[in-house]
Image 1 (cartoon, each protein chain N blue to C red):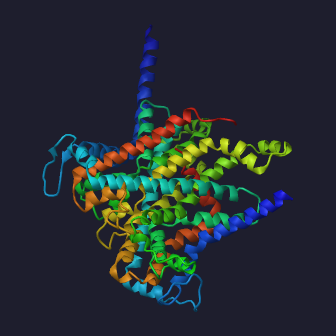
Image 2 (cartoon, rainbow over the protein chains, first blue to last red; image 1 turned 90 degrees about the vertical axis):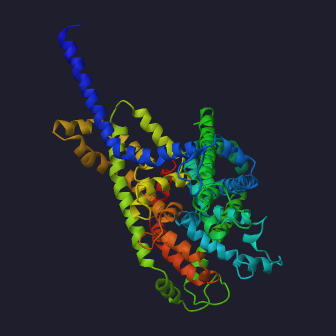
Image 3 (spheres, rainbow over the protein chains, first blue to last red; image 1 turned 60 degrees about the vertical axis):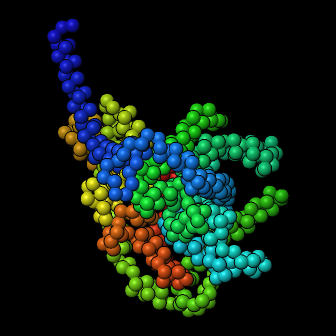
Length: 304
Length: 271
């Protein structure tokens, strides 16, 4: 290699370095915030899950996997996981189905579209706290609108928010009312991505609308389905605002879900070890949910 | 013929459901404007009155909370606007070593919502002596993975020849970002702005954990405290008035800019 070439390579190497440095300088502010408030807390939670750190302790005491063992044998933790599972089931499936029905209703030519879209979507732009305030009064025994309506149909007195069997469904209803419109918009963008010619062809072939829905619309919505389901799962897992206003976990932890339980351990019991262990468990669940979507996108159905 | 009947049935049914979905809002408005009484009504049956609002404004420091929320919302978006533009330019218009690491970080932040990490982040704030400050409420959100990704997608569509021409004219990277890339990506920033504003206007868990004084509390935390207080237990009129005041700015904004709002929420789905 002769000299001029070497010099050029050195220069291009220096240019490359300058370019890299410029890029990382631009990324620096974002990087600092992300490392401090996303990456570090993740590591810290995982780390502290192997320690005992309760109120009044100055330094964490290493205890191996004792926190996990304690939780997996703990009655309350099992109950919390059960509540979380039930509320995920009670919220994810209905919001997805109702969201899809909303999208189908809005995705037609009609004079009512404006009204429908507004009615279905406005709960999304208000805080969950506000929704919880409204529904808390709806559920009031005797005076609440729901009790009054039920009484008119001859159904007896129900105290939804203090009934062990009704509290999770009651909270799920609030969530479904608030979030179905959110999922609607993703279904809608999925529906609008479907080639209209397919529908024209189906009409020429004389296919019924039910048949068209199951043979064209639904299979082509598969990618949207995967995406919406992950979104719905994550949202449902992380929402606790309504629990805080409506029940605070009552009756006897019948409505305590995982994130609320993390909050209780961290800020009421001041047990950092257990709270970090719970956080780690929640991290694992969230990563698993995302992985599931990731793995299934590889063999998803492509018609378009 | 059958199709038309079907379609009419569908319209009728979806109309009914939409009315059902509107009940909470109708009840909220009715109740907020009805003088206190001992029963609930869905539709107004008295002359509208502002007495509930007067009571709420007397008893809770509403305007203090309101200003706090506005401050938090504006500053958060303002800073995000800067950090996001810079990061999005690096990721969308430059090629550099270590790109993949940054995308991994963004992916992690999109997967793990901030709410899950409340304890560890609270401890970080405490170490920085920033608990019970507005800055503390904002800090975890100032580097936005979502915003960076959204704006980067838009930056990628801008032809390189544009910035090359500017560079020949003597423009620095810094002015290329602010004079070419940012102005060309207005729709992406509008989407990001609407998402950011509605997120922080409505955010509750983190601000509740961080704040402990009237000076720093946002509206949502103030409302929750009021709604949970003993006095308001059966006084839904006052709670409704307070709730209506808090949701009004965004809900009215949504009624006016419906399409913009919905499109922004669609863009929130990109992962």
